[in-house]
Amino acid sequence: MQFVLHKDTERVINLTVKLVPLCDFYKITNTTMAKQIVETPMMKQYFDIKAKHPDAILLFRVGDFYEMYGDDAVIGAEIVGIVQTKKANGPGQFIEMAGFPHHALDTYLPKLVRAGKRVAICDQLEDPKMTKKLVKRGVTELVTPGVSINDTILNHKENNFLASVHFGKGSCGVAFLDISTGEFLTAEGPREYIDKLLNNFSPKEVLIERANRKRFEEDFGRFLTFEMEDWAFTPDSAQERLLKHFETKNLKGFGVQHLKLGVVAAGAILHYLDLTQHTQIAHITALARIEEDRYVRLDKFTVRSLELIGTMNEDGTSLLDVLDHTVSPMGSRMLRRWLLFPLKDIKPIQERQDVVEYFFRHPDMKELLETQLAQIGDLERIISKVAVGRVSPREVVQLKVALRAIEPIKEACLNSDEPSLCRIGEQLNPCTLIRERIEKEVMPDPPLLLNKGNVISKGVNQEAGRSACDRLFR
Image (cartoon, rainbow, N blue to C red):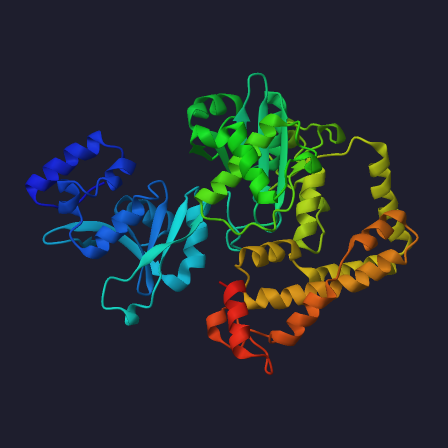
């Protein structure tokens, strides 16, 4: 970290930076040196917040801008391609600075996250016009490569998995969570099996015990990892966190109680969500076991050589590219999963073939389903946004459209003579009451942001409507 300071102060800081890790450097705000660095009240506030998130790039809201300082500014400016400047920080002192307009967050945030950076978004917690003192600020969201529900960050054709690996004596436990869809999976087995799962699920971030970094890299190669304290990977801590979330007395109902290492890995993921302030996770309703015996094991060399989802040549075409004519993001993600996890049992394979044959014999049914599925959009991720309170007014209207599109699908499946389609029809729920309430209370063409107004329908109690919207569209 470089500062422009008085010569004596600069000599002290340069010596100290060589001896003290950056994360500790941010924490020593009560020392004489810190007092010399942090001259202005706002910069002292910045360093206090930064000390709580030393491993993340802190986007600090100042008026209409998000600003980065120090090393964050140097790194962030290079990643997103903006100009780095300097900011006055007390008499004769300056600190590196880079920033962008707050409305451009969706443009710059994805670039930081895709570069493998953790990003802490620090917002103003009160209206500057309503106070004469320093505006209160706090981190409202910690976005990491493995934990995001932001559409500009996510690839709609593939899951965005966060993984966790726990080492045992002769085997490993692994868990995968896609917070954008609510899928939560676990497994355990020998190193070779876990290696195949990691490569096939392609997690964007992997949680490991701090003491096991070297072992992880030797066994599984290079993934973007985050080191957690060892206590998060203890059986008692993991079990307690999982039971608290699912509100159950044990895990027998999920069929994972015998996967002791896998349960520990899953519990560590929930601890990580607490750490990153993702506490509204009611859409994560189950922990499922990855049924090893159902699928053919494909290692990374097989997947690459067969060019199942990627190609060895820049202008090549993968098998997934050839096959993927799905009309919904959910279909794309499912097809990708099917390619990477081929079935072993003949019965489910034949059931899939029977459905395909049915569509050949009933092209009108296929056309109906394509039309209705195209209207559904990414229902899976919209539902997750509702659960975490981050859905937009337009997405709520899209939810209404999707629920309306489900009814013809349900009816067509129930009226077919194909058993697999009938079972799908029985499981579909168009949630009529929810759809009707949205139709009644939300304008048919609302703005993207709640604060733009014109969201609540006429005739609805405006105060009650605003209260409900504040809870839903935060």
